[in-house]
Length: 250
Image (cartoon, rainbow, N blue to C red; front, side, top):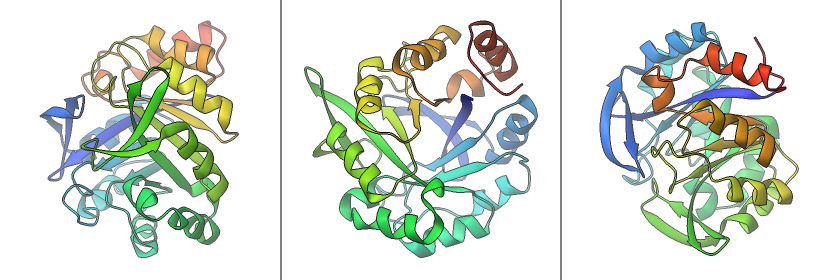
């Protein structure tokens, strides 16, 4: 069953959207979109506090409370999660998954600790990835601002070994472009790990979702602006995928 997942980037308590991680524009209140997506047929949601890591602070918790009060579907939270206490806090507030990015690179053992305490199915390794050469991608830190120098495929393998139960692979090159997911990147990750992979970065039309599922074999497809601005409605996307032989929840 393929999951359709809206991604909500949060800054200053508001949902925002940019292109290639810059040119950030205001979209809406998180709770408004959470309620909308709950009714629209989304399978899950991810919320990311996009400036927490860059500002060296913990995740803003206020919006998590507001979202939990309005949604009826599972949601994950990421951005600035760097301690076991951070994870406990967002789970107490209603999140079902913790998405870890920069903190895992600084301290890989954090993934192992978190998965042992909470279960690997609740610990997601998020990777902001950019092409740095022919068929070569590196992981970037601090909201895509800093090249870690770490090979993305090697890091995906290590993340699985440490206990991550899912990965969100976000293409910085594709972010907000609406030109399609990075299929080559997704294929390479999928070949190297055995846990569920969620594609992120670049969806602009329904065919892009189908391409990632059929060609790269991803387990979930994540998008932001095309859902936020109702350029693609989730119910219509699911119908399109179903008509093309993809198993989705209706």
